Length: 74
Image (cartoon, rainbow, N blue to C red):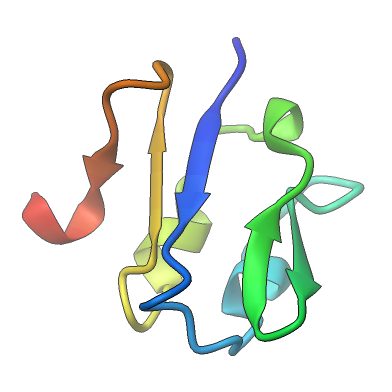
């Protein structure tokens, strides 16, 4: 199932926690300039470690392009 993962450029502080926490190889995320980017979303295992550990709640994901789950709203 394809994942749709967004990283808020406004909220991301480039701490690389998402990169460190991601269990996939290659990692779902890469750092580009001063923002994390989900470059391999199809590899996402839905463990949500990136979202749970992001200090600024900058990551959201969904199974649909139109619906995103924001961990800060749960």
